[in-house]
Image (cartoon, rainbow, N blue to C red; front, side, top):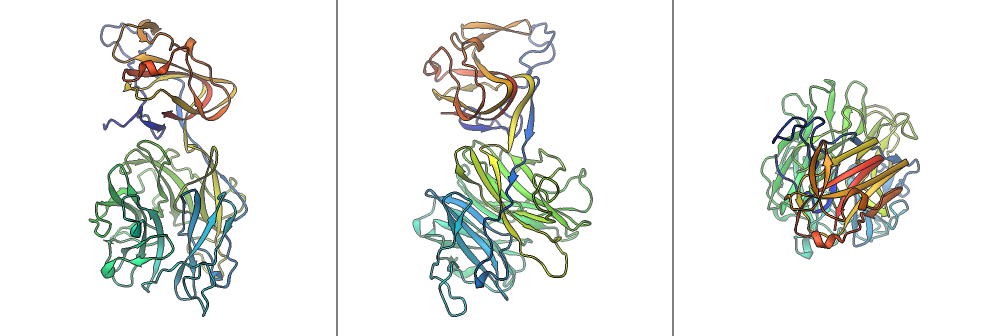
Length: 473
């Protein structure tokens, strides 16, 4: 198993990585009766967002009469929230543009870039359609590129090559150019929205596609990576329905994103299409490396159109991007339709709704009662350790620092066996943390600076608490 970078940056609880598994049997002559450094009383708990009822983007101009569709991108850029959204024209598609300061109220600036019915007074970005069926435009910022290509776009079009993905670049996200030669960057059997990104860990571009199998037409999610945005190797399957799913389920759009600010953590808010019911809902998937994924909620949806939602929507698709509009609050976005995915007849336009989560609130390490755990050993590189934590009635969190190198320090008894604890960093030396905090420091009687460079373990004691992240530095 790969050793992930616990102790660096922000650690979130995608899985049990970083948590010491302990020993439940006699090993090393300890004559244990209750196990050694065994985690107990804790579990990993996924959390659903709160979906707001009022749409954040609605059709209001003549060029939006065909409706705002699903394939949209939301991102933060130099302190400004920006959105590129899919507009259905009579015989084509277009990209609309909007801006916001809070992620709730969006304005549509009249850009004067693209003509519609003889006028450039609109918010359409300067992007020429390739014709055919073009859809799924996804925008991302490339920090490795020159300013002229700082913004990149991935879109699907079958005008020239069936099921191909094309690329475009822009200096500002508003004025776009097809790549020279206008050749596909990836010939791939996919449609709807595929999401591109620049992975700063890999120093490569990645694309997550909505895949369709050639033989069964069963849909899943593929991934391709390349050091060259203009040329990708064939994509490879990374995520598809399992034997635990019903036979009529398809994995649809993927809603991929890095977990903002976190070390070794990736997210998908992917849609599942239920063929027999003709409905679509949004599920949650997590990964450490973007290649191996799991669904912490199993078959249960993260967002559905049932009782947990303010309106009876039948088809819900997640947009690309995660915004942080307020301290401790994150926004993601969905496009929700009252009709089924293939339902015929008059179709009402989809509504772009905001789904609100706590910062890092996709998953928590939770102790409903008394719990404790030890982390894997790591070299301490920072003089600050902070928690994103919420405790319930009488709940608390406290922590001790153990010497992973076995230095001569104070000792604490664990299952009848002494373990080395740094003096002034015992449980009793730790200030008890209570309440609701997204960035509260752990504090001891000792000065943490003195331990920088040492191999340590953290020993947490929790009661009625949700721990969302540990921040080093």
